[in-house]
Image (cartoon, rainbow over all chains, first blue to last red):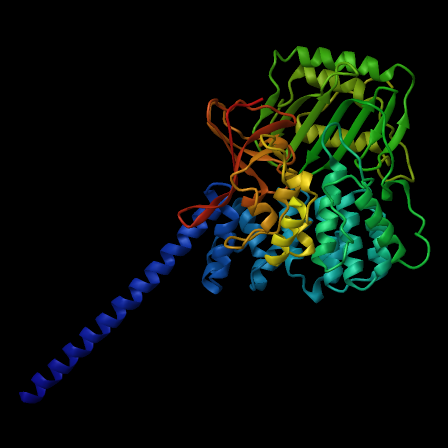
Length: 418
Length: 145
């Protein structure tokens, strides 16, 4: 009997201890689970500004945080798009091969809505085994993807010859990425290309695109420990201090500057812009088109490609587009925030300030988003675009590429007889 | 004189070349004149929550500044605040250092596409909600131009 009582007491004590320990662990697990769910929800649906912070904290939890993302990803990987750009970019910091493995197919899918985020995630911590995969996307239609792939390719010890070819990219972000990747690999002569960025003074209407490039590049060079001899990216390159700094940097390089294409150089002043059409599509790429008062079509930012138009073309286009603006009863914004943007700038007279009009949307197609008066105003604009073969990548089949972008942004634009 | 004092202060604070020791005209305006601050420079700073910002940015706290940029697309009509950004597109820039949180003291927001100039009292530093940094730069402006 004493034995039975003793056994029961021991069993009771053991069960109590198991219960205590078990309930303690459960409470801890529950707290962790709650925190994971809180961070996941904030990264998914929180205020836009907190999403990247929440996503980074989630992956910083390690395997448990990564497991939550994996759960959402699903076995077929179809959950990736729904998780949005903040979580996608945080995946770039994860150790999980499964998560990283889901990024490459998304990048290869031209319809995936967050391809620049996927590319940035992949370039965050490139793996040596991925050199070929990075190279495959170096000619992507999206400049942000090309820039990220160039960074990743450079860090994954990709070929120097291939990186040198990327110095010819039509977009300044991709060219800068190539030059910095080469610099990181000890190719000091690429500073000639980066010095051209430090000399930029260009604007896109009122927007100081040259200043942005100078700040970006000077910051990147300072970060790499390069002494810029007092150069300040915020100031024009012609100020005495900046001119001296540029001269000093040029003297520090051996030999003469390499031959460069027009778009690799800083370029000079441009004529007065009267119409601007900026298209940024998360699927079809970006276009920066301007029509000047002296009948030139400018294509691209920085030092743009120039197409000479018949005399009187721009003034006629201005009248047509102004009529389109007037048909909108003062409304200057259409759609909702998202990765697709169409921005029109119109200077009605040579001395007037530009009037902006914006159409924006998310990745989903929105039928008839662009108002009809504007679509009608576009037709004569795009009829001035060249469509042939060109040695200048910015002009290569320009019309058809712009048509595609317009169609996915706000709807197709009718073809006018050219 | 002022510039040499400023340079000494920055040197003592351990400032590096990345801080761009400024010409006096860019940091210290005449009495009453706002300080012109480049929004690209401000919003492209390397930052992670908890990190100390460069002294040159911290020195702008409490000052009257002038910034030129764009209202973020998505600004709600009738709100008393909006985000002010260097480009009209979001362009993959959605982190807390990428915008200035503008508060209108005597007006409400009406979305204006295109570049605008704002002048107001600037403040710098992390503002947190639920443990997340929700703003780094703030500008108090009376009304929209």
